[in-house]
Image 1 (tube, rainbow, N blue to C red):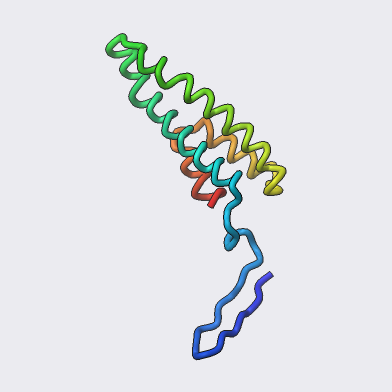
Image 2 (cartoon, rainbow, N blue to C red; image 1 turned 120 degrees about the vertical axis):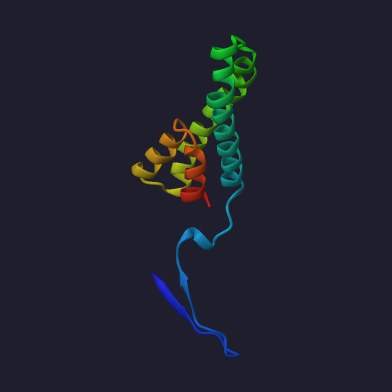
Length: 117
């Protein structure tokens, strides 16, 4: 629902949308955004640095180094997504996109820009 807000002192009128775009993000949402960023970054490091090093140079140490933190961040991302579905009243399509973003390269960055800001 749009409401026209008229301002005094020769200011231009603006519209005020009653959606969540103008609200401050909750602390849980801020934490989820941080987890999403770290999960996405760790996934990219695994896919494009650690795994190629493992299979071209035979050195699995980078996969071992990044694997556990990425796994923990992945599980946290999934858990927070289900929690935020309830808190933010996401529909199933939004939840599915957010969850799909966790397994696609650069997906968490898209989810952050499209759904979490």
